[in-house]
Amino acid sequence: MRSLLVLSALVALTAGATLDFNHYWNAQEIDAYLDELVSDFPTLVTVLNVGTSTEGRRIRALRVSKDGNANRPLIIVEGGLRGREWISPMSAAYILHEIVEHYYEFAHILDHVNLLVVPLVNPDGYEFSRNTNRLWLKSRSVNGNGCFGTDLTRNFGHLWNTVGGSTDPCSDNFVGTGAFSTPETAALRDLILSNSANLALYLSIQSADQMVLYPYSHSATVSPSNVAEHRTIANSVALTLMRQNGRVFTSGGAGLLQPVAAGSSIDFVAGTNQARLAFTLETSGGGNYGYDVPESQMAEILSETTYGFLTMTEYVANL
Image (cartoon, rainbow, N blue to C red; front, side, top):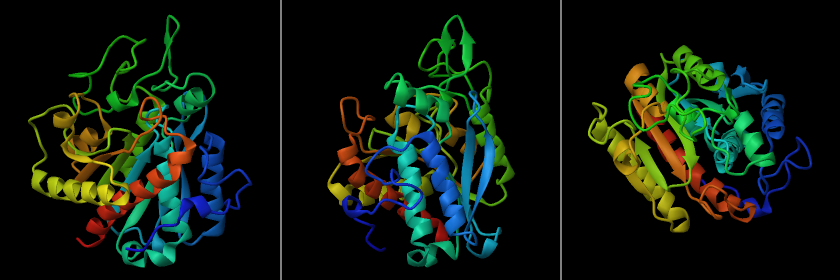
């Protein structure tokens, strides 16, 4: 595997003077970067309009497909489900930066795998966290009585609202009014289902527990039928992550290593869509709360996370 770029020396990207990986991009800048990649690499990538958020922002995905071959195994990467986890959409954007802008270094992957990356599923919550309340986790759906937002990690359809969430619309863990009751999760659901025939691996990037997790989130004792395969990959990814900067990563079942909670995206993919592999990568953290990583620490975490992603991707490419 090649060495990733040293981010501290990275020249600002050509989409605009503010687009570099030394600061957190806003939702508009993330959107603009996808357009830049399509403009610069039209034979490799296409942009998809996945849906529209509660407040009217576009939710978009970038499809990476060498020679336009749609029949390769597909990896879907989802970022930015939770507003305050800014390192998540930046990680997804940096993965695209590496794979697309340096595609010639990853022919061994792109010859065998297609990618579909949704950098920012929750643009409303992200912008509210950036501009109003740094701790904001949820979407910005209007719940009434002065309460806003749904925890998108509790709103997916597999065993929705059975454990680990709240029906209080003011709670940070509000599960929503029904499975896929938010336009954000409904859009992601439709994207997953429309690509289910080729879906080999699904990755949710979150922060910042330093874990590699596999289904199921709703139970500490229920596992996918191919749990041994999940366990082997998760262990390998955790070792890769630890080799980068010496931080300790834990791997295992999501419901075993974290409080059990229904409605996660990986549970939906594994339990309803029955894709072969599904993981959550909890990145390294920093700052006061873990997920408020200072910009000075972004570079090493983006590189670290990308190495973990590449370990998963190379596994699928070699199937």
